[in-house]
Length: 259
Image (cartoon, rainbow, N blue to C red):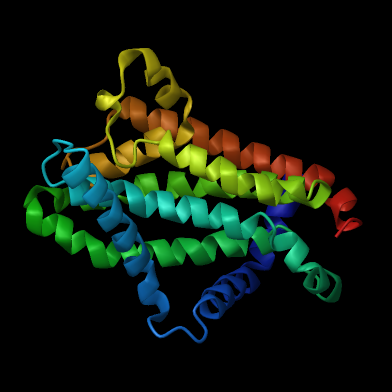
């Protein structure tokens, strides 16, 4: 069953590509800055957080804006993907009825559109990291590792949530609150070492911690992520993507009747 679905996805792969680029184009239609919002939004959030934590709370991290940016960019991709893709099946119900393609293309194409957005922002921001620490240059060859694993994890979560939202429409409303809570317990603007030892178990249970840490290791610390970090990220990504896809495939016929 799973093998056949993968074959079908491969057969319609160009349709998936076109859908992703179409969503990306529609996202910035009528916008003056266009895709440059992929850089502007994380920079604005970073600036606000930097002001609060360096000027108000006097946090003592050297080059805090870059430290924060290394976490903000991947978090922004993750949170926006979840926000936009969870309700994508409901928004595209007429499209599913008119055309023949795998249903999972709807949420997957939304995630891929945001991933392209993320890559564009990353390409534009990386030279800033290089300017501050030239040692990261050879490590950039390893950047696809966290990128691919992070994408797999996000796809798995999105497939699960989009399926769940087809049955329970409250998921979309709860997601906003959940993402806000998730953001604050993820080491985006602080390091795990800064968390009191008695509360570090929260970071350990948070799957986003390992992805943010890997990005920060490469872009800010100029070091290769630990082998155990990479292994943990691989296990989490594989488990999330397989579980999300299996749930989606199992309940596809049921939720199609509801949308």
